[in-house]
Length: 61
Image (cartoon, rainbow, N blue to C red; front, side):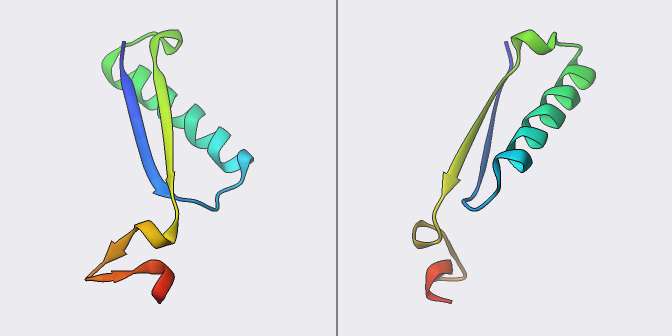
């Protein structure tokens, strides 16, 4: 049972997240020959205040 976690900044539409989940599931299924029914995808959304690059929060830029 493969579990895939995708971490990304918030702000994507439901349609974008739906497409992402479908394509990740297909890629995992094809790559490791796993049944799509056994693949679980988690989306973890982060807000810009909790994410920093080069010592600066994205919300401060």
